[in-house]
Image (tube, rainbow, N blue to C red):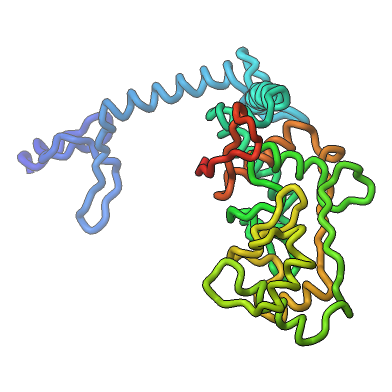
Length: 313
């Protein structure tokens, strides 16, 4: 009994566990007692530091919510204020970029990689807002609806920055725009006999490949089509006449589709954007469309402005 009492000394009314020398909390169940093991010192110091940090934070920063606001804090900082400042700086940077873009000659964009990169990024967003409804989100167009694919290298009016910029500004076949692009193909309904029409269709299909054309179709083409589309079907960018010798067909290249286009041609329209969008946005759209894969580079020093070199921006 004496030994047991020696092993179980009392300290302030709490029993000391003989094996560990740690006080018990007084809970016991089936001979098992809970030790009142003290917390590690590092943990206590961490707790004290967090308390100090919390007090400092409440003093320095907004912390206590009120009815319509929160306490300001000594530093007068707020997340809304920081957001407003970030937005102000972003707007300032954007404004500077837009001013530079509006001031530069659109042709010189091709020689300014950083400004061109920013213009393409901005044009991508502007395209989704203003152009994707017709040309599609990926600019692939629609043969069914007659919207051209902007990813290829077939351009009715030219694929360099200057030509694309002019097209976007003035539009295509707009009755209210005096400087718009115009290319009108007359309907040939009732002009040809059935055999002549089939011969002409066959000749158009033979352009650009080794397929032999009927002499009658070749003569009909020379008499009625070559003045716009060229003697070999290469088209004309000055007139906006499509190239018939490549494999790209806006309205389809089957015999039935070519026949329908000859008899009753379909011609699309595009609004001019110079009155709807500011100059910087028009140039951003120009840069983006130019970058899609078929953009052409124009030499400012060339005597002939038609001297271009295909590039991949």
